[in-house]
Length: 397
Ligand code: SOE
Image (cartoon, rainbow, N blue to C red; front, side, top):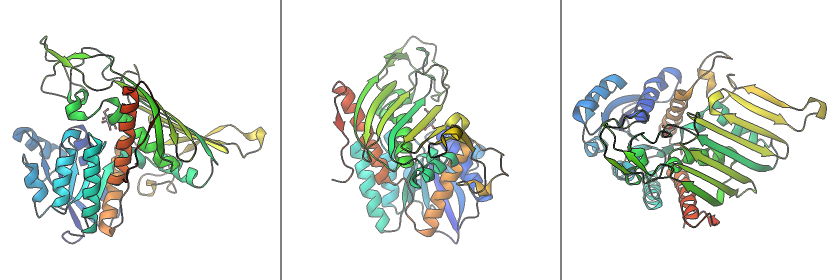
């Protein structure tokens, strides 16, 4: 550990939605888990001096700055946490890794495969010098999801035949919703595909231990022109009331079928146009011996169908994932006392701190996140070619 004794000093870049989620997790993690090192929230960085000062105060950071280069080169920073839009992930991560920092980067890893490849290569080089890196696919850290992976790995579903995943939102159904950064390709890389499709790609590969090898996809941008936004650019942004508009340059929805390398067939749907579905992530895995299903809106539960039971007793059962035997939960509440969305980030910080403090490789690594990026890229290519079957390039060439 390149730290002061038992302390990991964190510098975070970006402080909007994900920055707030990460801050809460950094604040909480040492109060809940007994870890080999304590996270200390040293400094937060943002472009606007006034706003970042307010954010530092509100989110619990000791200091603030508008200069991310200065932040990533500070000798008193051990971990750089990147919570900015995708267009700056590569630049910040590469500089932080070159400065010997451990790096946690929000998903998707980058806006292009070329950037993701460079980041994965830099992470491998930095690893040799002791710097670790991880991509923030937080839903892996929902206890029910981690349990699902354990049950699949234990062979409880037998041969995996189907992977069925959807991530549905509706925050841009209104054509008057403004052209925020998530709808501009030069900032976000892609639309629903990279923002939420990346989550279900990672999550299904994590749970099944299988990788997507090829896809056939359709994508659509239903509303092609939107009013320009006011200064606020979050998920609850307002149009500025003027008549000026701009083009939407990303997908609103992406739907694809896939083959996985263990023989499973996958169906995937990521959309911001599922009216009424606010943040609905569902994954179902069907195997020769049973089925497991997860629904983020009921994240403390797992549905399980055990086809090995006597026929007269078969049926879907509900596992309430709140026992201290379940992943991550021994440090939280007594059985039956549920947890929520923000806990997935606390668990993410727990795993990252543990890895950094012990020198173990954290997961998902930048190499794993590059593989997700390659799937995203295959989806885009397939859709552009009229859904033609597109193989996922190997991550290692
Ligand atoms: C917006 O679509 C968003 O905040 C994603 O960027 C997050 O990754 C997802 O967890 C919730 O929705």
